[in-house]
Image (cartoon, rainbow, N blue to C red; front, side):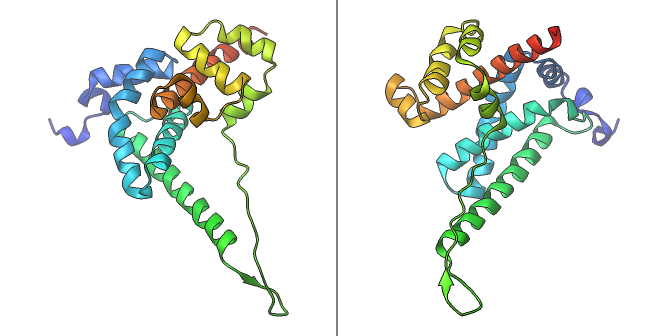
Length: 202
């Protein structure tokens, strides 16, 4: 049999099973896929942006985008191929926006009279999940957060109730920044899953 024409399911049945579970929102499967591909995805993105902090943020954002759209995954392709394509496109978009912001802040423009001026463009783009969680009432969110494992509850409290930055959270609980980002990512997925479950009841 020519392996070129084997589907992802046929090539990697165990991984395929994890992807199926992730499609159903299984947190263990999502965590497994995240841990399996995080380092290689980070390495690829780091080569593109050449900044570790940006690369780590883009890696987490890529996973968020991938898991939001995982039902669109076509098993004719490897999961890693699909994930890395999302990561590449997301990073290219980031670099384009960064170039736009750099140009608008540092490059002078000229009007019809020859006078130079500059335009400051501030990116107000926010993560849709961040916006959704911040719109929830504190009472409603506290009720949901109480259902999470303890290690996520502290992070959510610091991020959404006390509105600390990632760096401030790191100083508060003294764990690596990347670990904080990954755990917040998982916590947000769990919260959004609970919110989605509540919507279906009504």
